Structures are given as C-alpha cells and as structure tokens.
Image 1: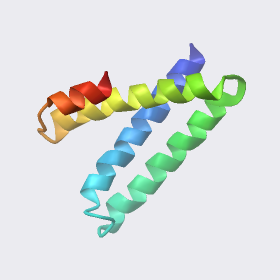
Image 2: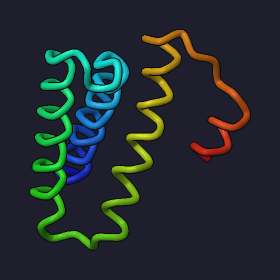
Image 3: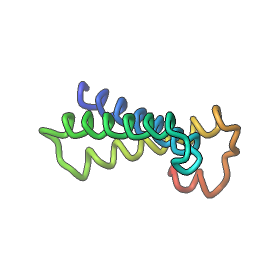
Length: 92
C-alpha cells in the first residue's frame, strides 16, 4: 500500500510538471520552467525509490495509468479542456 501511495505522489508531480510545461510557454518563462524541472525530477526520484522492490513493467504501468487519469482531470478542471473521444480512448 505504501508503494501505491508513492506511485500516486510521483504521478501527481508528473502532472504538475506537465501543467508547468503549458504555463512555461515553450520554456520561455523561467518560473514555470524551474517548477517543471523540479516537479518532474522529484517525481522521478520518488518513483525510483518506490520501485526498489517492484517489477519495472508493472510499476511503470501503474504510474503511467495514474498520470494519464490525473492529467485528464487537471485538463478538464484547470484548463477547461473537453473530454474528447480521442482522450477517453487513450486513457482506457
């Protein structure tokens, strides 16, 4: 259960990093760019720590699935994007 919680934290940090990609305007704004680097780096460190005793394939798939679902939720909530068939198919 602890490992799953760490995977969830890593996925959330990856989504924060993804949002900062959008706010950085192609890495032209330094504050969101630094936040992007920090969030993704910390997320990767947490994921690596959580994967110590887990299989790569299964653990990576769990994090990617959580990240995809959280990214969709963030896109809908924070960026007023719509749920398209393409996005829903990608999540599934």
